[in-house]
Image 1 (cartoon, rainbow, N blue to C red):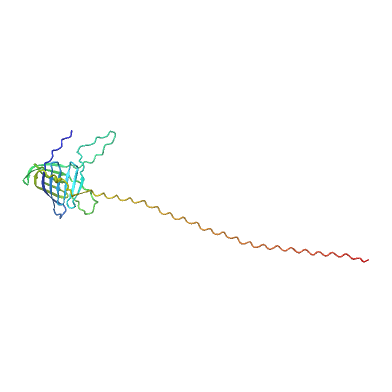
Image 2: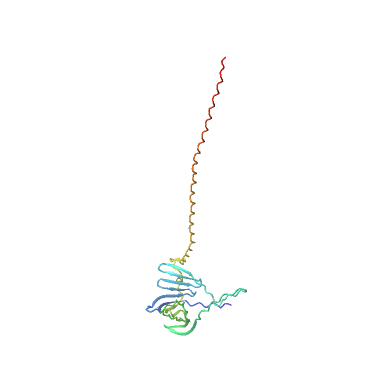
Length: 264
């Protein structure tokens, strides 16, 4: 049987200032002021100078409002998977690989005390240092220290709103002070988008670069032309045959002698 859902947090509003001081030498503290409102239904609105964020866990969406451009961007919140829900193994199939265990986080109760005239309850969370990937060694390069990340939070025992928080680590330190916390349900319009704001979508993902085409095959060399055939030599003219010698003329036949004449 599933455990009953936790009771809703009380509705309230507060004003906060976050101060970030980076660990780098010469870094100056940077401050960000914002107002936070929470409804009895779990919706949260955070107002910065030029933008606002409205979170609706029941609908699974977050709205990012740009008050300069009067635009709103809707983002789907990631689904939260309850811990400890491991799907049963299928007979005959190998089990899913077990991921390496993450560094254990240590939580310590700090008890109850008074901060800025408000009764608060505190907790400290310590996350062991995560070893960053080692860059290739350079001669004389200093080794940067890796510190554990420690988060200390103090929330109001009555309204369960943040009053003081501190996060320290290798990056530096972040402090958040909240004051003027008052109970009460924010107006419904605090969690609505103004009618004159334009709905925009996420920027399109960069187009996948086109795959280079296959190189064109080299052009085939032209087929050499057959050499021209030498003209067939004209056979030399056959010299004319000598004319046959003329046949000798037959000798003239001698004339027949005249018979003697007889006189009587």
